[in-house]
Image (cartoon, rainbow, N blue to C red):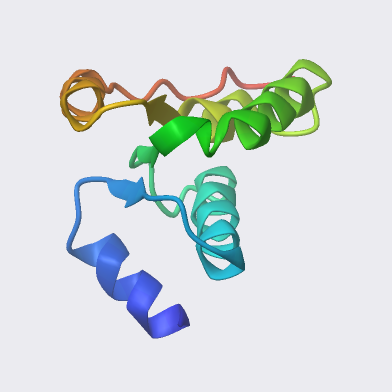
Length: 102
């Protein structure tokens, strides 16, 4: 699976996650964690078909509020309820690095 993710990283502008199983969740978190290591700054769009990712996004919002995950990692996770909304958000995405912490 690692080779597949590296190929996606090298050949993509963004990642799109559709409702699926544990493997997809693993990839979402792995790709998100790479932002903290400056491996990439590409958006990951979670397509919320029938609200599928809503609870996961709530959990990640709480983790961000409690400073468990960096803002840079949280901001690359975007979500949309429709394909049109997803495309618009991906087109508008601008990465903003975390401020340097002294």
